[in-house]
Length: 125
Image 1 (tube, rainbow, N blue to C red):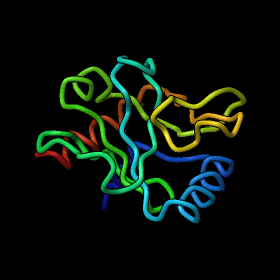
Image 2: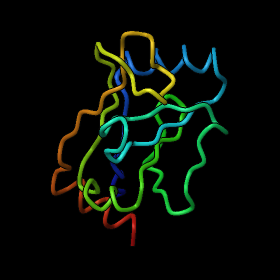
Image 3: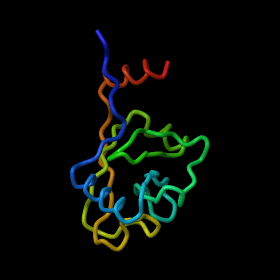
């Protein structure tokens, strides 16, 4: 029996639509989960090449073909958490590409189940 490895990050239909609109304007994009500096702890969307991903940053997966990263220290806090990228009304982070659209990316989260945690731990071994 093969155990499925759960995704660490997924996106809602609204988030995928916004990613496509941003990609049409800016080319390939990537996400980095902000660690609480200037824009709180918002998911930040950047054009590829406009943000340099750190050598130690953790790639959680991809949403709509866009890689999604966070810092190693933040990953230690969130490693047992499944993230869903969503879109809500409001202002985007001042450096994030959705800024000025009156919507912003938002993270919804839940803890992985015990079975999902075992599968992720087994995949890392």
